[in-house]
Amino acid sequence: MTREQRSSPLNVQPLTPGTCARSRGQPWVLFVNDQWGYGSVTTAIVIADELEAKAGRSFAGMGPGFELARRSGFDTLVRTDTMADAVPAELEQALGACQAVVSIMNPLVARRAAQRRIPCLYVDSLLWMWPRPPDVPRGVPYCQERFPGAADALERWRDRFHEPELVGPLVAEPARRSSHPDAVLVNFGGLSCSLLDAPTLVAYADAMAQSVVTALDGWRGRVVVTAGRHVLDLMDQATLRALRPDVDLVDLSHDAYLAELRRSAVLFSSAGMHAIYEAGTLGVPCVCLPAQNLSQALTIEILRREGVIDALDWDRLYGAVELDPANEPEACRRIAERIHRFTDDPDARLALVAHLRGSLGRRHLAGLRSRQVRLLRAQGERGAPRVAARILELLDASQSLPAS
Image (cartoon, rainbow, N blue to C red):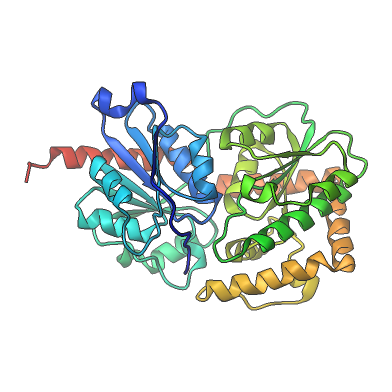
């Protein structure tokens, strides 16, 4: 699979210099992700939150996900290409300064940590979708987030991993939902994909936002559309405001997103598993939009099969399309073709609007909410505390080893 975004200047940013872990004598943990989307960044954020006051927390990466991490609770940030073929000097420096590494679906950094004998934990969310397991170095413990199909995949490849463990959904601890939700939230936070060019990402956001806003004609509450600034600034905001002048177009931090979600009667979202899990945690029904990339298309397929959602995806608009997980670039190219076709297809857009309107009935939303909450609960307790505990176990074990 190809998940790369290329070079950026070094940018090391201490966010809380007066209280950094080094000054308190605490260990330092470096988080890296695969620079793919927001899901792997929010995974890092919720795990890092569990380590507050127990370890210093640094995040290394670049691109839109880095901007999301920048507005969270990390103590320091290192802007660097964590997916480069050769490890950049600033990443080597960050590795040398930490006592443990948490690799969120990044085999390259896990391998480098193993080479340098730095304790490393590999955290995965997508084992269920791949035809072969990720190349996790020997001796690096492995955590896989629960999702339908994940347990079977882990059992099939158990001998490929060191101390493998299934953990519950990697989402934030839920806060109380508003008793009087006044908003509809439209989520494009995860629009970050190196296999789709910027015009495709923007075309998707424009078409989906306009379809949702059209379907919400008559809704008297707020409508909030959230996306990363890299997409938001390029969207056709004039057309969207012509459909609904009071629409809010915002780039939210993860905390601000969750706060808005708590105030929402319904979430419309591209079908990221963490978006669905976060909504289920708060009891907010999530109506899934057509897929923007391969993992979303496969998520829709699985959740349809599980009876959780009845999303109108590209297969129902344009006929079945073969998406091979072993060839992710080609799968994303085929999805991109349908995104651009949809942009200029009034009949398909009317079909999606009709489907979204049909999803807004009180009985339908109640059933959707019930099924999604049931899905979430079936995955067990939140996984972030367990992952944080494993990180602390790694640190304790490394500190008890005799000096070499």
